[in-house]
Length: 335
Ligand code: TF8
Image (cartoon, rainbow, N blue to C red; front, side):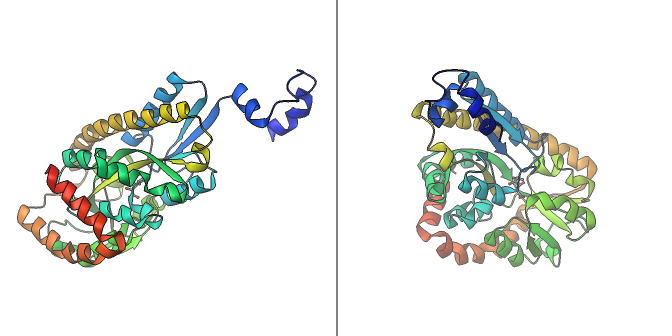
């Protein structure tokens, strides 16, 4: 509304203003704002990564001004992705899991107990397999620029210590909006419900659900430990974050601008991963003081794996058997 009102007055301030196209007016004028929406708080390493991206972009060009919105202020993962499709939001960095609603192949990352550690995650994501997966949302109006890290997920709940798969019986758990997660928790005996992340804290606080699962930095920085007494070191799945920019908006940038943004997203992603791993260790130490921590023995972990094995088989066709095989082969190669 503000630029619209100014245009008429501008015609008598400068002779060329009236002849300029809209595009020229933009490039000669103010920087374009790139808003980043993230679901976690400003204490989370994802926010640190987003601020690093801002710093890297703004020190290289005056074309962009980056604004970071945390805590789902703009939207949750899925809704933010829909805004990217419409071009009403520039950037979001969601978990891959809700993205299966756009591209089923992303479900590979939801197969439980497949990625064994962060080194393998890096190798798989930074190699040809990761590159291929990054490009898969283009048809859906989103361009994937880099892999960041959410991390290994761990279970919390408010009703009892969970150290074996039998302890999951009847537990009401929130999962991400993802069928593989739903089926996996069902197979392990729990009672899962999908829910967007921004609704999670109050659902835990009000006791409408007993528990949830997320990496240690999130359990810490979203204060879940205040409303959850029990923590289990399940490490049941590794969730990447994917740096996404609206294709509509991306296509309007010059090659040079695209290079700056892509390189900054990758660089900030490296920083985010590094910080995430440091924070995960620190968060676990802190959480152990606030919650009752249950370690899962190797023997018990085997029983968790056995319970979810059929889920992997069941979902192979919906994800795409070829992608699943390629993913598992990549992991094996780097293990
Ligand atoms: C989840 C995810 C989220 C993130 C973030 C809020 O449990 O792990 O924490 O994707 O956007 O929903």
